[in-house]
Length: 420
Image 1: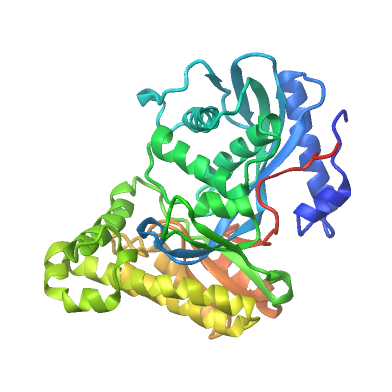
Image 2: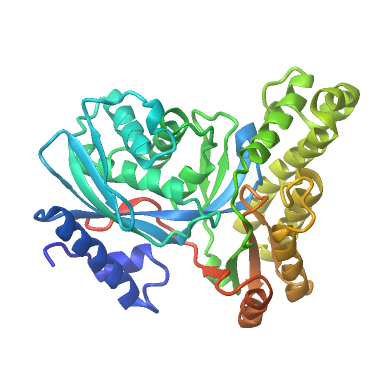
């Protein structure tokens, strides 16, 4: 191969490299082969951006709250090289080619909800920041599970930012800024009003506690914590629900929380307190409705839980951490109500998956709805001595291939060929 990645670098980035080195070397070969077959080229550089898992703070980031998240050992790999034109060409394995001209960087209405809009948005922001972005070719492969709550979209935004940072910005843009650029592209160009948790977790890597009180300058604390030493495994369970259009269900959560905040003269719930909400409950209930009040209670308590979870991990109290995870899961079910779609009785896949976790864990470990909810995934912390039994039980009841055992990786968006 005309580009090489050292085993030492792979071992540094991927926690599973030591047990399955051939798997990671094969993916490097695949992305290089795909690049050569698609673009030719001389010596592309290799970049990576991981998926992420939400650990604490369910639906708290959009209210300027706290979250706890982590990068996982599934990622997007990109082989990229400057092509000497003003055109960016990106081919993701299994998809059609994405092309944008650097002479056309305004948002395009007919391009919303496409990969091209994200590429255009990232390039536009970097040029606005004063960097000279030029044309390049990139071939990408991904094993970030679609529809898994691991945020493949954020990983794509981060890989685009990481590639451009490496090729044109001398690697000087820090991980948090790359995340913010990705969020800008998603909000303004893609047309989705997202928070910043997903991009930050992917870009920074490891277990990160993020405080979005000042969204322009979030406080990101990377925890000194090694999950591999806890004696537990992290499982993500695909509930198997139909991923129909749930935009209205998701949008109702921040909308109702905002109405509650407005009732006490605030814009976001982070600016108020449970005491203030309680003292003005009649007006809050009138403005936000009963479900809005319940969701407000969830936010105000889960915002504090996210901080407590981070503190417990840093203190080495994993049992205490698991207790708070359970509390958060119960709160999402009872107060946030993002486990079942309103009015649905036959199809309650997320609730069913949670019930199976409850039965199989039998008081041990912890489990909770993961991410947005409604038709997504469940997260479980499973003692290693019962992992096999748990995985088999989930796949017997929820569905074959639905239980994914993950590792947390310490490095976020990065170049693998750095120094080559």
